[in-house]
Amino acid sequence: MDVIIFSGQSNMQGQTEALTTISEVPNCYEYKFIENTIVPLKNPVGEDITYSHERGFPLMPDTDFDLWLTTNLTGSSCYGNTNMVPEFCKCYSEITGNDVLAVHIAKGSADIATWDNDSSLYTLTAKKSLVAIKAAKEKGNVGKILFVWLQGESDAIYANSRDYYKDKLRNLKNALFRDIGIEKFGIILVGRFTGDSRDDEIISAQKEICQNDKDFIMLTEIAEEMYRNPKYMNPFVSGHYSAKGLEHLGHIAGMSLAQTVLN
Image (tube, rainbow, N blue to C red; front, side, top):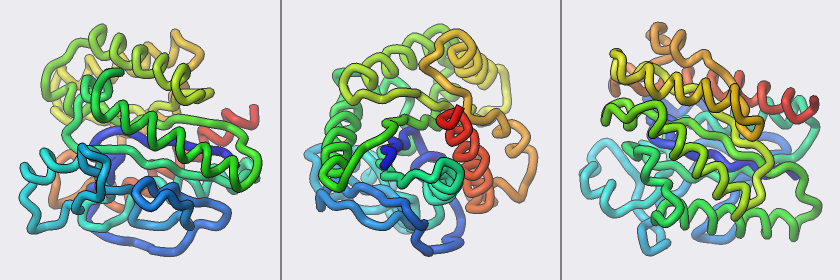
């Protein structure tokens, strides 16, 4: 069983407009931290976990967003809708032939500094990942331990520089290698959230770090093209993918990671 940790902000958390399917993905599972259980993988995914590592509350259409942000450290798929993780894992498992345990640790509106090594979010990322790996080992052999990142929109909003972002990203990668034992850090290239030069800093940072550091893998660069196609974007929440969009992104990125693993 390969363990894949999915992390990032709102597009990784999942902020789509629909629930396309609740079918279980064959040979794929999700680790639930609150219950300490492994369950069949299906939409919606993720967990609302508070800063005290207790059960939080989901983000629904009538939820006070500011209260949700200050209460929850991580979030499940917004409104109980479709996330990219099931389609990603389906493609990955079909190509590699391996079972998959998905570990979802994402939160909307989070800039990269939120994952600094001494932060609450990083602490939970490490803790949840390690207990998930332990649970997987109790089920049998653990193969690859991989990390998938979809984040950067908030850093573009804050006008963070490419060097700042690369430094933070490299620090996060080093911590994950050290504390969790990941083997590769896969990046799904961020889209053009602000629509101006601020995006270029984050996009360039992600491309450059994948080119210059063998620990990183660029899984796909299709986000910019997708942002120009209305069918892939949430019609109600600007800058966020639709259910069809996240499934498409997960499909492409999952195939890419699988091919990397096989090679």
